[in-house]
Length: 224
Image 1 (cartoon, helix red, strand yellow):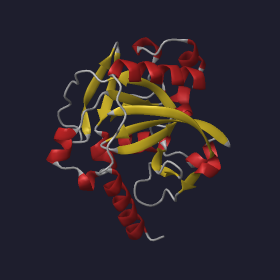
Image 2 (spheres, rainbow, N blue to C red):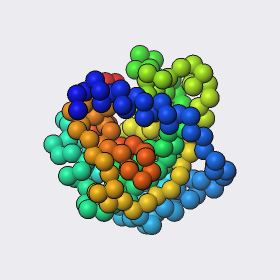
Image 3 (cartoon, one colour):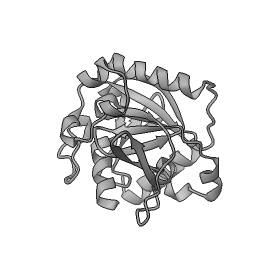
């Protein structure tokens, strides 16, 4: 598929999803508690499965989770994942996104951010977690810049930050949904040479985007 046509289709997809509103109702405390339990059950790593998720447990070593900071991943997400894998689903501006738990470093409550003058406009600021300084991304602006308006920006209610591996990058999100076991065949994989190379494919039944965290970290590092 030509890149321009693929880009138009993706824009239409994201445009349609922005009109979908969440019907779930739960408190921030309940959602965070549920997400922590799901992460433990999925056994992302020994540290995450055996301990409470808090700032001292989340490191910044890229090597720990296999996230590459200075070079693009050699293999696509499809080739890096096992035949079945767990994924976390979360929501931003009515759009549901998914990330494999093996590429997830943790979930943090959104706190007051420290501004970062001179950084790209899609960097909301720094989220301080203990001794860590995490670069918080305005996920809506990164995912669908062509639809990002002041009205959309004003409507966003970011409550959580999803950490990409054990790197200093986190995605702001509004709602945590669930985790689910997926199969490689559940995904409509796409050619990452096109637009949005961080978008590994679509979860067919859920009609949501699957994020390639390694590719996303590489792109964020190159563009920041």
